[in-house]
Image (tube, rainbow, N blue to C red; front, side, top):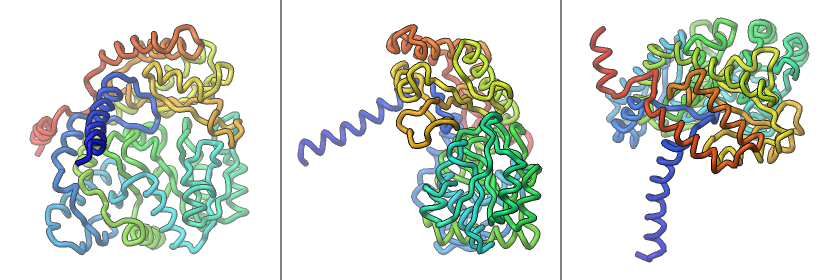
Length: 447
């Protein structure tokens, strides 16, 4: 073999080891879209090596269970998928789910496509990108460029950082879409589902809630109750506030003719339209993460929101503009911070990265939406540090380190030493199991 090829292979191995140490041990992660798995969930993934290599193409029934599969050797794979499905159904109090989605984007793809097939209506009302919607909802992304849907924006109230329910009701009534979508990526406050779900359904639309960011909070009884407020479908990823393996999920309630029709079309959009290998190796870990949230999700969700609110207050009282101050900064896991006066989102995110504080620059609702390279804001999420055990005092100290960088009080390299030291104080992951055997021992007490 050529020497250059061998160097590439060695570089790959050593760089992977470097990454695990850097992001896993030396950084404080505040990316709002990245979850943190427990040791037990990680172990479950490592125990699913054979499953990771298998295929399971086929159809599911209206309970979300395996109906038919087109390969042999499926007897345990079928049970695993059904167990994971039932654990998710129980956690979220619904009677149908599909766990075959490989990402949150895939979940949106299948949901939007399936419902549009059911309604034969290509119009969808969505939050605007400027208001924190995910790119998959937009005419410039999946919804428009892949599915060919006509997207119509909800009315948005910048002062409230939320959808304007009264004006959006008028938009829904006048455009009569097939889908009305809620949820997003920069998502601090519950959307007005109660006020708009009835309006949407009266026009013939299905109500979809993209819970990718807040699924774990919903599981813990925080933020809002989408099904209770009138949502038809929840689409989500399973690796943000839901602390599972990377993947996606769709949740709903079957039973009446209207929902059964849409669910069948969504299932068709999953297979055969958009997937073949459904990455089965993640399903045991997904089910175990669901168990952890059933047991510990309420405390985890409450502390996550408290930590985000603490950070919002701390940064605001130190002279940094945090959006949503009049409503308590946030009711989710994330806050939005305007750092224009300190050099802008690009500069501050880069400087914080040099200090081993990892977060992302983000467009704010009043920004020039074409200025994606250097927006005004930062999006900061607290689900990772919460699971590591951060409480009020720890968050306040972390904010003091962030402020040192934002305000230029110290060089990032100086702050980095304190960040690494702080990170070393939080090596244990809370609100979950430390091993698969610990989970089994817990379950055997009751089974």
